[in-house]
Length: 222
Ligand code: DC
Image (cartoon, rainbow, N blue to C red; front, side, top):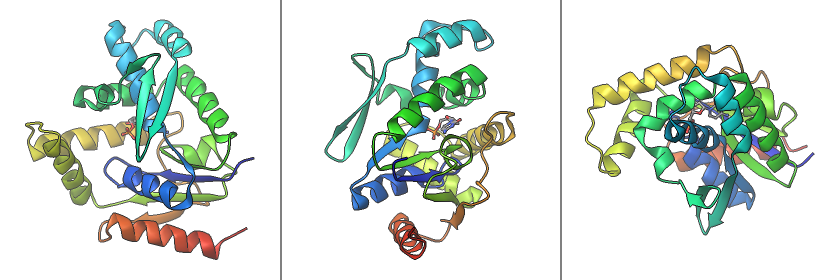
C-alpha cells in the first residue's frame, strides 16, 4: 500500500488548508474527497434529479468522470471536460453534497475511486471517513477540530472573501445542520478513528497545526 496520511474533521476545522500545506511540505499528492461528493451533488442538481431517486442518482454517479488537474499550488476539478472548481463551492451545493454522501451507492463508487487514487503513490487525503473507512491502514491519521465559534468565523470569512452576502447567523445555522447530518448518518459517519491523533485548532494558526502534524509523524515514524 502507498504511504497515506488521512486528515478528517468537521466543516471549518481547517483541514483543507492544513492538508494542502502538508502535502506541499512533503511533496505528496493531495486529495480533497469533499470535492468529489460536491461534484456528485452538482451533477445531480444540474440533472434535476430528486434526492430520493436513488436509482437515478446511482446511475449518474457511476457515469461521472471526475478528474483533478493540478496547476502549481491549486487544484482544479473537472467533470468530463468541464471545469467545475468554482461551481461546486456554491453554497447551494453544501447541503446537497452532504445529502448525497449519505447514500450507500454513492459512497461505494467514491470509496473505490479514492482507494484507486490512494494506490498510486504517497497521498495526503482529507474528508470525513478517510481514517475510519476508506484507508483504515493509513500510516498516519489525524482528526482536526475547532470550537464552533472559530469554525463559524472561518467559514464566514471564507464566504465574505468570495463576495457573498450572508449573515454570520445563517453560516452558523448551515454549519450546525451539515455537521449534524454528517455525524449522525448511518454510513461512515464523521468521527475520529480510534487510532487517530486529535488536534484542536481553536487556538492555533494553520501553520502551527502543520508543524504539530510533522512533529507527530516524526515521533511515530514506522
Ligand atoms: O469537505 P466538504 O465540506 O467539501 O464536503 C462536502 C460534503 O461531502 C460533506 O458535508 C460530507 C461529504 N463528505 C463525506 O461524506 N465524506 C468525505 N470523505 C468527504 C466529504
